[in-house]
Length: 107
Image 1 (cartoon, rainbow, N blue to C red):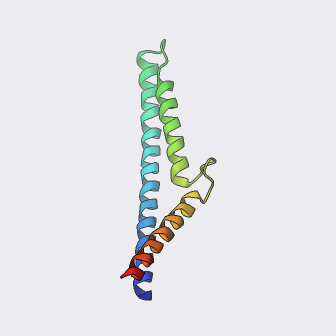
Image 2 (cartoon, rainbow, N blue to C red; image 1 turned 120 degrees about the vertical axis):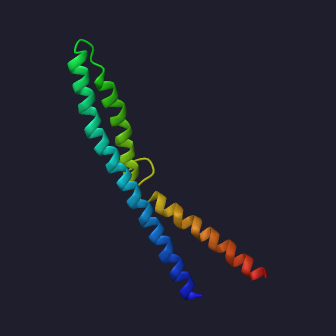
Image 3 (cartoon, rainbow, N blue to C red; image 1 turned 90 degrees about the horizontal axis):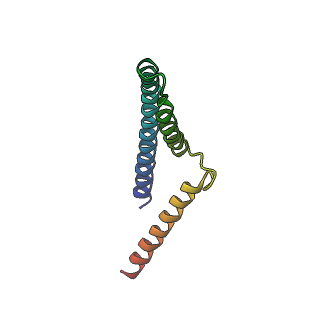
């Protein structure tokens, strides 16, 4: 039983690490696209319609989204605290384990 739990824990840790790596990669792809597209839009705006500046709306909108994306990926959340997700995950896992133990005891 101990070996099974260790394997389960390892698989859980692996899935969690893989998810985190994907989130970080997604953020960096988003950041790269931002760094390529916004200067292009700025050039287009200033070259073709310099009398009407509209590029900053794209820069601002996407920038705010990028900021919140980064907050989520890197775990900076002033509202929930640093370890909120980890605590919730442990809480849910303990509840699930208690349900399993209760079910196994009633067998």
